[in-house]
Length: 105
Length: 175
Image (cartoon, rainbow over all chains, first blue to last red; front, top):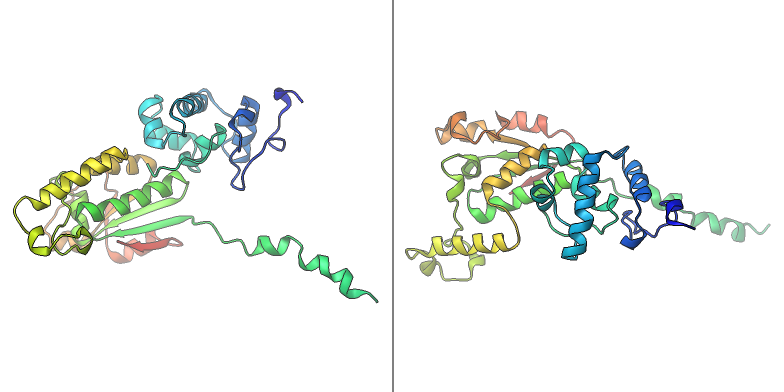
């Protein structure tokens, strides 16, 4: 199976739906995770956030908290809540194929 | 009939497990009644964690908790060194001049290390996140405070009865 054909049924996830292996993530998987989470079609703004989260996690070794995303990604706190109304803290990391963030901020 | 062997798989069927799964929290309403730095943060952080998880959050500031949303006071909240058994220093030592400000600056430094923002920024984040921030009318009257004394992020001044109306279906937490 090529990565382009990967579906969220085929990737390994924990009981909360977070990917167990972030290398199984593809933009296709992200779109499917977004639909499953009720976020809908991903816009350029969503992609700005998701790309930042993946790059930051690769550098820092852990998924960024919401305050960090709002300060460094160029998408502010209000917009983050508009993009992921059902909880940007969890959903940005989940759709970016990263583990659940451990921080409270 | 071999009913016993036929029935057994039905008992362990999965739908029964799913039925007992607890309902996720939809709305948390937090009553913040304390004005010390160490008691201000728990309410703010819990409300923020709720919003980050997509849970609705309502904060009701009453009594000394009003200091947390009072413009002139919120940047000067202190850690209590007297009457705080968790400080692990004798009460009389805690009462010496300078002890409170030392404990306060130590706590602020530790919070900064954990990337937890100052109280003012926490309130801005909460407001941006869509959390509801209310002040208690009775406590406002008692402390002779006007709406203009509060930070602009406050969504309104409520009676306790109004607060319950706004908290319909919410889990309540008193700090």
